[in-house]
Image (cartoon, rainbow, N blue to C red; front, top):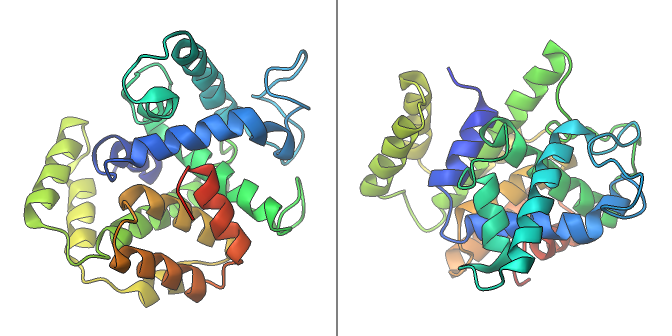
Length: 269
């Protein structure tokens, strides 16, 4: 079975809301512009001597560094060509979603690393995280180095995927035509039958927010699930807004955390 971090990437490319890649692009742009210092990687992005792929213990780690490095190239190209369709955010989001094809591992952890960073920044802004602080565990923020870390990354990615699929049901069950479209896209990118069966099963299950919340172990995971959920829906209906409010309330998420996630992804609060 393909790993769930790969599946996150496939969903980014094929199964998010129409503005999903734009929102990831907004987040990348925000991390490049303001997030590097707060996440513990040098004083400023691109500053002499700064290494976005290294960072101190508890910092961004090499995986996000690779993604941000590629994103800087995309940002530079977008600035030089402002007439490109969709603007900077869309260009960077397409890069992460696989549209650019130049980020090695975009389907194998790049999107997960950015989502983990969005969550970390939000938690830090609410005073719930400090670089290297005990108890701060955001799988995906750094590349796993042990089987235990790899297992934690996969468990988190699976939980985030469940969150995305659950959010997509906020307006009712997912339309069967949409289900088949998504599965068809997963086939195109090489997802095996077991992976496709898992996705189909999750999509056909009735919405059960309480069951999802019961699987979320801590505030770090809650922030990651919330950020991933914002890729699955447009947040333009009362049902979707109510769903997000219930997710935040049931996970006891600090209001400032949700607000910061919205701001980083360029969504009106």
